[in-house]
Length: 322
Image (cartoon, rainbow, N blue to C red):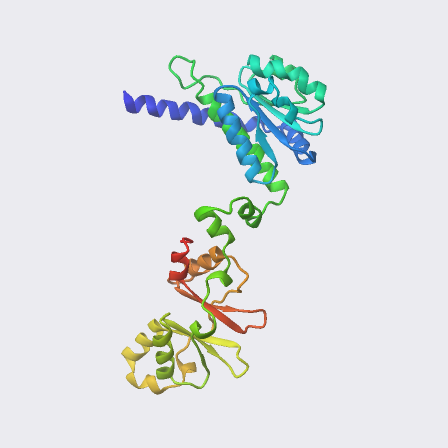
């Protein structure tokens, strides 16, 4: 019975979200465009469970390029309405459209002059009648066996809020760099903000060797630097290849005399490289997508193909990028 009820709950809530798709209509688009044209803030309000969902919607909007905050409707009636200006857009959430705390502040919001977007399940409700834009988040039934606890309705509201936020994000051309600016802390911030230049090995730590040197010379450099690879440079200090410990091992297993051969004879002459201003996360992507197997080192080159450093997978591991 436990499993059956859990499955039924998920099915009801999945159905509630699926039913939202036909409601992405012209009025939904008009509401999103109104937010795009708003040069002030989005104020999200809602009571009870709708308020909890509203807080999350406001947080999602704020973190994806749309200035937004949550205003508790009960506190609004006791002074917090002073936070609302005529240039703001208020997203009012109420499944029934009759939440007394929300309905009570509607005339004052209208008097202030702010635009009202209703996220509501009934267009004929007080909220539905007194809004500028109506976004339908109504559900046929709640997952609650009593039909009382907000379940499917709150799930649908949250999903519609995400739909609004992602549509806005797309229209604003919001980039990963923009996202990083709003998320500077923790592992997420490191992953989005850290560049190759921040973690690469440079100067004396950068294993390089000139063309014409022997494989044995390359092995010495590789051993000294301890990164398992060495970049091969031409007479103009441009990169022409890379040698890894794996390449040397495979070569020596076939012919030990190769230690005295020129590095050009065994190097990989089409090395993957990356520029120092790229995100460290992008370097990881290059390493992971290398075929037939992932690579662990990337020479770092400038616009003129001068080697300025080298990046190892362990550097990314230490920074929490992986």
